[in-house]
Length: 462
Image (tube, rainbow, N blue to C red):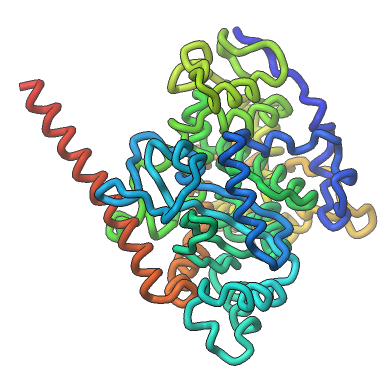
């Protein structure tokens, strides 16, 4: 047996029950001085500086920002920008070229802003060429703000923008929208991106707290969909795949995304997933590493992530190879019922409705269930979230994994679909079609390569 979980002092007991976002204005308001440091994934310093310099080119105030995707964190079995392998960047720096040596890609950003209309007003004055024909509407900043906040997942994307010689795509989101999705899973559109390794370039205390809630919620959701024993690879693939359930780009008809995308992400970024989730695993009483190769000291996951960014390889052979280390969870209905009760509010309500139908609970009785599952008490305020009889009953169901998957799909499907449709207005038809065509072409290229490999493999067997 490996070492038992060791309590992480940066996550004090009860932090979730006391995580009231409205009270977080400064980093000193967070539960601990090191709280949320697992979210800061280390990358090459020169490349990080180039990403930070992109932010400084915008005069409109950016409160929170992160870079994400294959342009920042490589995915296994991926190739460069176009079919001819040319870089999409007009004049990239040496750091960008070296970091993306395995395949140059557009770099994706999300900008969190305090006041949507004010931000777009300032950015329209500085960068009108970033916007589609919406900039010609009367009161354009108000119209753009309305489109951003009222449709899709609350994000406004401008793709194919060149900044400092680098081709980028950036999305603008209101901080309230971002915090809401991270803590309650209203759409899982942004929460899903932050469940995978990203490079945070400008931090905000409220968003850091909300994202820690998001990460531990993703961990619990994956556990409720997994058996008693599993590997790190299985756990992280389940987490990474949540936001792609119901995403129209994963539909084979549209061929917008590589069907092996989730596996490729985890395969290339296992150390990054460890840095995000091992500190949270150490604080869950019903989950433990059972692998004899598990390091005994705290912080081993961060050392592994740092090694992975340097010239020496990560300790894959020592730490379980491509599958990672072995884990085991306690299948006790009480403990799993507690996990159900601690799922994000908007998501949990959808799950409860699924089981209301299955259990045949009448409306009046179900109202009592929802009242008992409320996160706040009229007199006592926030209360400790522990599963009751209803949650324990859900946790004991054999179909829990499939019902959870259905609930995730319901959460993701419409915001993701409407966000895709919205892109034809926000990016403009030409740029939106270019983005879709690039995605489709890369997916088709991957399918052809896979078919060729299978054919060659079959010939060798013969």
